[in-house]
Image (tube, rainbow, N blue to C red; front, side):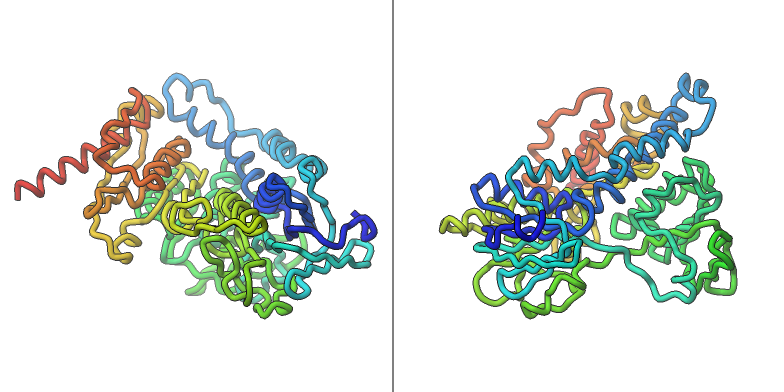
Length: 490
C-alpha cells in the first residue's frame, strides 16, 4: 500500500504480521474496528517461513522413518534413509517458496489494510511507516497500537563470529543443501530439533550444550533421555562445553570451533541456537519513554505496564518475553483482541484470573512440544518450579514403555517417561511432562487438565481408550493412588 492509499487514522495499528499480528488483526476486525497492519518483511513472519512450519516439515519425514524402524514388520521394509532432496522440496512447498501473497490475501479478506514498510512509534498512538521507496506515512491509532515484532537470534560475543557467518534458525530451516558436518551451539528447542532434522537428512551432527544440558527449562529427565537417544542415533552430544572462538579460512571452507580447555572441533557449518532477543531495537520505543531493544513487560491484558496514562500500547508474542511460542502469542492476541474491543466500546474489562480479559495461562498452563526424536512435551510447572512457588507437591513418574500396553504396540522397546506434579493441598495438577515417541498429541489433554483445574479425583472418570498411549494417564493416577496409600499406612 502506498502513502496516498493509507488512511491517516485507524482504530488499531498492528506492527508485525506474523501469526500473532494476524490473529489480533482478525479479532479486532471482527469487533468492527478498523485496522492497519504494517510489515517490513514477509506477511506470516518468522514462524511461517523460518521456524515452526519449515522445521516441522523437515522433521516429520525423519521421525516417520524412525517410527517405522521401531516396529517389527515395518523396519524390514525400510531400506534407505530420508531423501533429502524430497524433504527439502516438501519444506519449500510448506513455506510457499517464501512467497507471502496468500497470507497477505488473508489480511485483505478480513478487511485490514496491509502497509509494507518499517513501522516506528512516534509518540503516543502515533506510528511512522518508512515505505520501501524511502517516503513515509504517518498513522494515528484511535484506540490501540499493538507491537507484534517477534524476536531475533541471540548472538554471543565470540572472536571470529562475524567472519564465520554462522547459521541461525533461518539458515537452519531454509538451507538448500545438507551440510556434511554440522556443529550446533545450544541445547534448547532449536538446537535439539535441528539436530534430529539434519542428522536424519545425512549430516554428521555435533551438539554442544552447557552444563545445564539439553532442554534445561524442562524436567531434568527430559534432557537426559534425549541425550542418550541422540548418542545411540550417532549424534555427538557434548554437555558442559563452552565455545571460546570460531574461525573460517575462506568463504567456502570449514569452520573451526575453539573449545574451552584447548580442544578444537571442525564442521562445515555452525548453527547458533542460544536463545532469542526481542526485535524492539528500532521501533521508536524511546518516543514513548521505553528503552529500545528491551522486552516489553505487560499486564495480564497484554497492555505495556511502563506506558503512562490510559491503556493504548499492547505487546504480544515474543516481544513481551512471557512465552516465546507461536500458540501462546496467538492466545495472547485472542485475549487482547477482546480487551481492545471492550475498551473501545466503553465496556468494562475483567482482568480476573481465567476470565475473558486475562492471559492467565501465560503463568499457569503454557504447553510446549519439541518435535525431536524422542519428542518432549510439557505444560504447567516443573517440580522445582512448583516447590519454589511454595506449593506442597507430590511427584509421580511412570515408565511409559514398561507400563503402557499401547506404547509397546506403537513401538517395539518403546522408551519414554511421564511425570505429573500434584498440588497436595488442593488435589489439582500443577504440571505434566512427557518424553517419548508420539507424545505431541497427548499434551493437549494435559493442558486441559491443568488449565481447567480438574481435580485428580475427577480424572479417574476420564477413561483412556485401550490400547493407546493415552493409558499413561491411568498409570499416572494409579501410581499417585499407590503412593498416597503407602503414605497413609505409615
